[in-house]
Image (cartoon, rainbow, N blue to C red; front, side, top):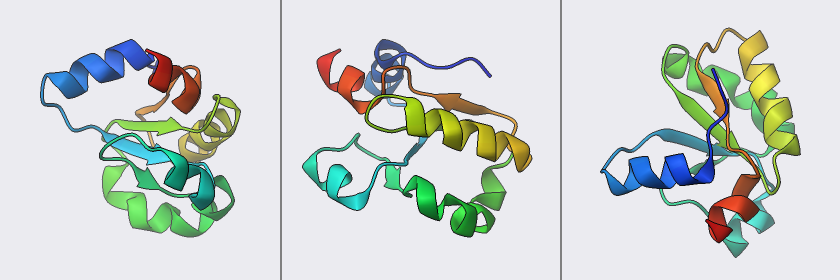
Length: 99
């Protein structure tokens, strides 16, 4: 799946869509600001939580972090686990805030 831009995500949210968004930042980063509707699963705990996401294997999942690096790693990991529609938020939370 191609990555998603902050503008595209915001447009979809404004249209009432509620995509599955996973924030792979640390809890303290999530407390400083978050994307509405996102769930916080820090990258280091993702392998332990992957079984909880099993029902989402065929659904679109948008992953994000602060700038895009950790979420790119999360995207690759989830793809390896058989998740077929994982998209990385380009520029991460920083770009989302600015858009």
